[in-house]
Length: 398
Image (cartoon, rainbow, N blue to C red; front, side, top):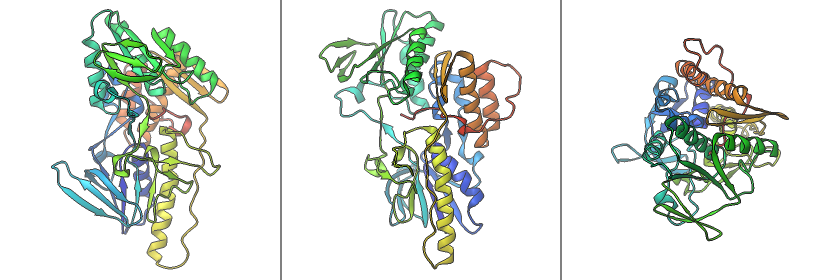
């Protein structure tokens, strides 16, 4: 019996590692991803300012998984038939037939059909994007403006890094963060929003809320109110859309995470409605937690189908619940844990520890240790015991 995990982001890697422990010995597990490495997405913005951090947030799938890892791009999925169409690195097309599977393909940057935005803005989804953002920023002249479109957590973090990079290089560059909603971090509690806004201002970021982009040209953005905003660099973190393998859609799945007869789906590839009927936000923590529920359900379905008779098992249901949120803003950070909002070094230490805890949870102990040393500047001290990734949400995924 073949079990396939399509995608190895937060959801896919967590799911695959859990299935390695829970599947019966006769079940074969295969993981398909377009890359040979797993990227710790919530730390990607750091590479804009510190390129060397790329090694600490990149984990080899072959090193962390004890199953077949196939490098290919998933171009189509038939969730009922258990069939995935793959494109290999050499351009060949293959069909993968599986008995039970999971779609964990993540999402892509959404440009919402805004003229010129895709052509002129750089997203932040891959290491290559972070490096390009850095290269473009360092090529700006004094008096130029770098615009970041979208003030979700990804936009907040990259704006903070650019402002800190300008300070380090003594560059006279305005970093401007645009958000169409009335507040930054619009999906989050008001106390968190206020603290994030203050941290951005302290970092030297110019914040413009209630400001939507209409279209973009080379070196100029036209806003929805008709005014123009000149720029030397344009970064776009305005939202997410679905994987092309699912027709660029993010289909809704219910709390059992079932997408089709033999396929489950987890993470940003879909919109999850949890057991309380609540829409689950696109976030690393939600993806990780939902993956453990999907693993239980896949193992239950595999065991049932091995038996070949009787009613299908009662599937577990996912309920979204996180105790707080975290975001970094340059050398500062903001954390909300329950009713308490933390800023400064305590928040930064908490965010770093959570990131290291996630790396430790996927077996990347060296990377976890190096991340803590780099982020907290503690020299040769050990990272210590890794904190589980589910203490607090580590980022909004955009």
